[in-house]
View (tube, each protein chain N blue to C red):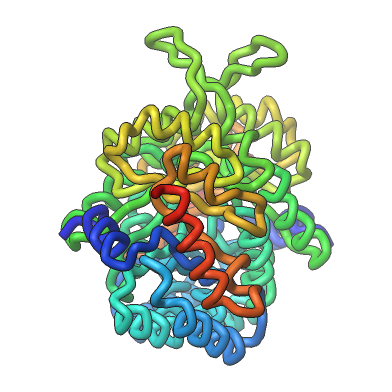
Length: 254
Length: 254
């Protein structure tokens, strides 16, 4: 089943739009593993997917202890997203995607700045072959995002001046991406991107809580999934926090 | 010593501008490690640095077998560049950079699209603190590079229309990067970027050989270092090939 549908079904079944970002602050590998296992165990019933990043991959090793977390997530039937933000040449991109898919991840994130030919084409090909997903960065959640994602691009053929994020959103449609990332810290950008995507491609929105994003603003402007990291992982009671976000999202949309 | 100077000194001492990209094609981890050790052992006298990428990090593990290669490179006094193309939010970027530096790498590559605030600022800060280097992508070597790196950007303040790669090159100057990457497959872009950088920031040029880049064109247009992967790693005689490229570069510049 295409990743887009996998996400839709599990999100409906669990009545949750919350994706846990297991981006734990640096610590020794054993502590990191234990913390990750504990948080995953505590919140799995409240989330619809889990997202990994280099916080865990680099210290734990993709084919070493990360596998224990992958197995745990699979036990809970949670889709796994690797937020590797692929942005290399095609040969390398293919190798990266193949590794993450082989290691049990269901989707990868990638940066559309790379372009298609010898860039992200091999990633989409591998993903299609393995029935996995590709999620494109369209407008990131951090304060400096305006510099690149917010710049205006001049189209030499039409003479138009177009925001970078619209160009990236159009690539997501053209390349048939399974999702795009737009920071919840920029609700107006979510709205603009949603106008381009027209529900064809779901919006994944990070930055809720710690980075300043607001649940309601993200969802009402068109985000489909909320990616939440530190607000849950640094919480005194991760399960309660995750449940709270899940319920708040339900309320917003009811 | 700043990474820029480290590179300059070793390049002079060894009379080589060749950086080996140990980007080996996928294989089982033991074979990969053995191949990498063998190639590094065979070519170390002809190169001035070695560059790693996810081809080795993901299957071998940063703190596992990659450490054996790091030790081997250090034995030969070779600076180590991690081509991780950092492009995440600041908190994640810092974590990535810290891991690679802690694991023995002397420099990381990063994508300036991310911007400064909460983007690459933490990477430059960590690098400065640990006396390590940051190399920025300015124009990549693959065929689709024109899509992003070649796009024209409209400056709302001045009304100017500026190529993306010039904006990235200007950021390299402003942020005091230790180097920039411009593909040898686009010698005219090397020349344009060199006009902006005026020898303040050295140009690292990948894509020689397998991807179609020509040694002479890259160097004559302003590249300082040649990053060579498959042309050496897939050669029947990696040592001879690396020596050949080293000598060809010397001839070009004599």
